[in-house]
Image (cartoon, rainbow, N blue to C red; front, side, top):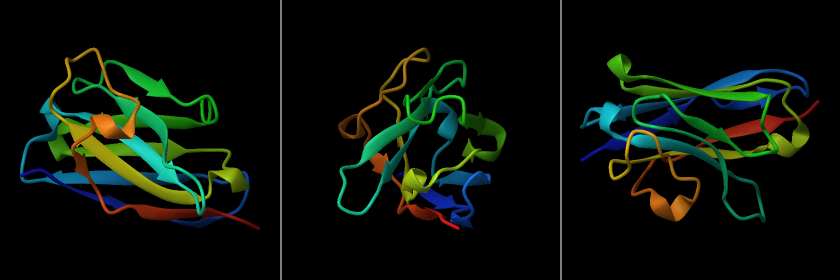
Length: 127
């Protein structure tokens, strides 16, 4: 059974940077597409970014394009989300999710397409 644990969240000022990590255990992550999602209070969970199992293809929500970068280190069973130029509207609980059902050149953007989830890490952007 794959288990995912997010870390790296915290409080950062607007314009700052933060890197959140998604560490996997129980299975090798290199067979899984991985997505990052976030949920702010009172809002629905939204997709932020995803990366294919090989790492060859990535996708980003328009709201984070050019500011966030997803990457993966399969040797260390970890996926990262580097977040730069953070804005108050980026404040949310960030979740990583993974699923082994997708081909190397595809990563799903919807939460219902992922079977494995972490517990989330809080990111707060505030001065």
